[in-house]
Length: 494
Image 1 (cartoon, rainbow, N blue to C red):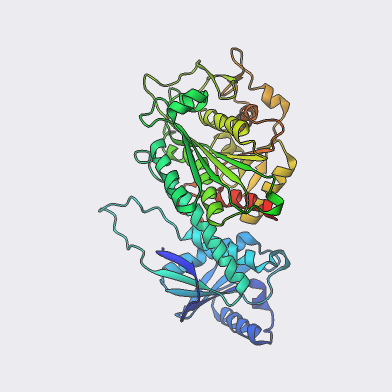
Image 2 (image 1 turned 60 degrees about the vertical axis):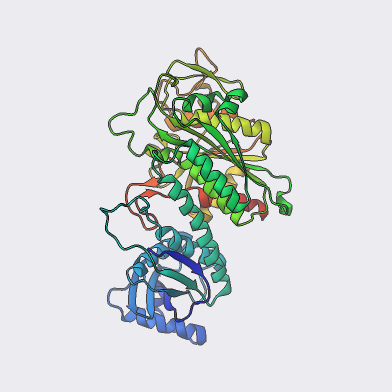
């Protein structure tokens, strides 16, 4: 792991040359740039067993590293991210101080934009360079990172992309650091401190609706879910309103709502059989939101964006809400509680209703680790998305394609909404039957979004953390959603 990574002119760099597997079978080309590339290809051909598969890395000597990009016909942005991730881990073992990234020659048509190519590679480098070691104590012995890495490229567009990718990865890693913070430290009060600190650093406007104010406003979801905790619930609002708005975004106000349950015991519907371990990750929807707001502010994206983090800790004491309670939400919808472990939708609902009422957004995204059912349906590879607006979903799908943060659209029909209607109140927070379990959460939330407001609900329960190391992530939070949401917001400027 490198202490820092930046893009700058590197003196005496080690060259990292990307090699396509096709090139190993073709004749060398002429021309100065092509000649240099041909030399690298010839070197690659001489390396026993090197086939230039995606992410394959071979360290030739102290001056040259070769990394595989796979076939030109197959390579996509995800391949470049994988290559970047595996490259940085290989370099970590040699600890160079400077590296020049070289991908000479024409990239395939599908990656004709060299800026995006540099961005994808640097995202992989930045994400894979992060690890969870903040709480290692005296019993853990490992070398602390002290090498500062400089990335460089002769291609100005590619170099610009490298800067872009590192910046996005840095905000994703910021979200990961917050996400892995344990519940004895991270509670709603701590989250307020972090949000205010971020606002000071980036120019975001931070407003906090505290527990008392939430009670006065009738935020029954936020209040009831979090009232049993010593750290009382709140709604954190971060606003990015730049002086200059992009011409195509002048009429836009985008809201991003992130479920921030700092710890989820399940309440009186207590989690059992090991189901509670890992519930610090139940705040990861909020971490995606705050990470995206950080990226948007630091990149000075010319779009008006408001991030909302409904924060609560779902605990048990004599004050806690119970199954059979009926609570009134911000928009006066009443909810019969059937399961106190279906708490995330309650805090989200108040935040969504508040956003529609006070902010009048032109589009809303919400992101949450909402249901285990979406993990059963889509595994760890994709988030589930429910949307009431085809153009908004299409925008999100394009952002997914660009960032590699995969989504899959799920149905949301009238029958699903009717299924959530209760016998003694307007709605159940969780229908007694488990039918369409991940859809139930989206169906419930739909009652708190104005019909005319484009809205997309993103369930990241399967993608927000990983139990094992991957090409880009170590075991722990992934920062999923930061790059997806940032790209979606930036699309309004194009």
